[in-house]
Length: 83
Image (tube, rainbow, N blue to C red; front, top):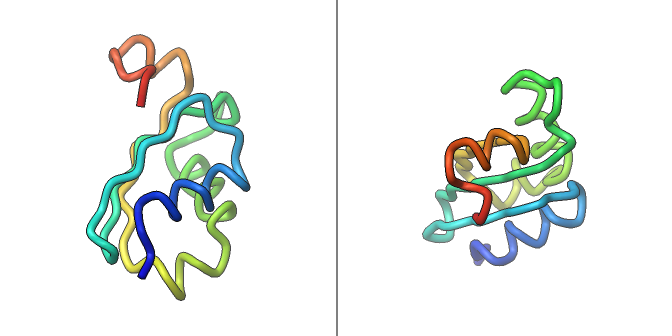
C-alpha cells in the first residue's frame, strides 16, 4: 500500500522542494508543495512538474492527488512556508 511518506519521497526525488507535506489514506492524497521551480509557471504547469516527478506511479499506485503548489514567496505570504 502506498503511504503519504512514500508519495512524499517520490515527489522529493523528482522535484526540489523547500517544503513538502503529504497526507492521505492510501488511495487519496493531499499535498502542499513549496518549490522555487514553480516561479513564473501557471498552476497547470506546476501540477505537470509534480506529475512528472511521480511518473507512472500516478496511474498505477496513486489514485487521487489533490495538491497546492506554491513558490517560496507565495508560501511565506500565506503563512505556509513550513509545510
